[in-house]
Length: 344
Length: 247
Image 1: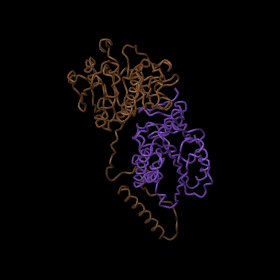
Image 2 (image 1 turned 45 degrees about the horizontal axis):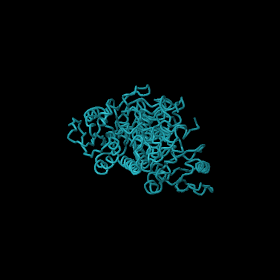
Image 3 (image 1 turned 60 degrees about the vertical axis):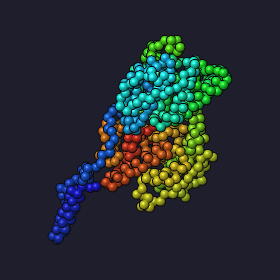
Image 4 (image 1 turned 90 degrees about the vertical axis):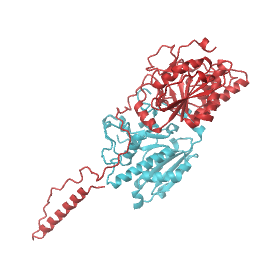
């Protein structure tokens, strides 16, 4: 829309020039002198709109331009060979990710199992999650327990809620651990697929110490176990008995993933838990229990169906370990406990 | 690779040689049974590049996987017999040089063809300039939802300060202080849904600019960059994937 002012001005200019040329021409001897009228510089002015242009509402973000030739973290691997990002502090900008994910109005679910004596961990888990886990997002906590009455009432931020899911208690802690896949799978099918977009499955006996944000969201997310990130694959505690459905032969495997953290789009978590439960049942039928229970099955699955995003050990730390220099920030870590006492 | 940035601040991988294993990626791609398309324009004198492009693309572009090549040209008769790899197919789409077509920008033509035809034939679609020759394999590492290529001048020192489209009235305007990377319009793509959204948005932007008597400085590349500023790519290709030899 060319402003009316400019249009009128240019027409006037044209008219004046034409009039002058015509008047000059009528005076006999023809002189063709170049005549420069002080016309407004039409072609170099900024075009002004007659009415206000609708401003598209994109949030303006001002930040340093990323430098193509200057990697942020040179001390660690930040992309897997199948081009899945590995999330470390420094590799991402939380503001950009927030600006991408907040407008999507997502709800993220968290499953955690508090069976038997593990209910004592719920309070600290929830308190720390309220402080650090996906702040500003809608979150549904699903606490699976055999004693719903012992789950404390929690003060939650707006947009976040707690749902207690009653489950059966099994005889041994290994059994309890492995039945988690089945329980999550059933719950997704019955309830959570309708309530959340992304689902994280976390261990309850852990605490958040630092922000856990939308950088963790992805199609299928796994976390690198803190004990094995610096170790060759031959030393991974994979299930090495070929009789097990979780068997991973020597020479295979990328990383050793921890069973305490995994997640992704709810439909992918459904498929994942289903296939893990199937392999666990297959082992049961053969009377075998994998070396690290469902963690072995999780690792077996991730060898053939690689995760689309990996979380560094910052997201699944073990407090009994000293913090190495590559870990700049511990976000989620185990709570000190007496294993013998708590596992009955 | 420790000498270059391999991950954007929004955690999209930047594909450089040495960052990926094509074997693993091929296995993943085959699992999903996908078809990829390539769109290119060869109008007026550019028909000359068709043979070179098709020969190198057949050899190097997603070799071993099914690729549909869609060639828009106003000289369909000038296309000599082209040898296509057995998995690939060539679709020649005639473009007229008449005024009606002149008014339609490439983005506009693309978006309507995606809507009417391509979305039913391919899962992923890539738009490549015809005046390129592939010199090495370009494989399934490019396959992702929304993929753009970093302009090669971003890695050459003298061009680091090149400005974005700064005419404030233009739909392609990028204000000072914003912008991550500059992307080239010579090689971009992604899932057919995302490419449709991109071409629609760019052609609408171009149309609005035209109505206001403006033309963005670098034509559809400016509009592409503006779109990608607000709809960040899920994967970036390093300048290895499109090198402007004019530099």
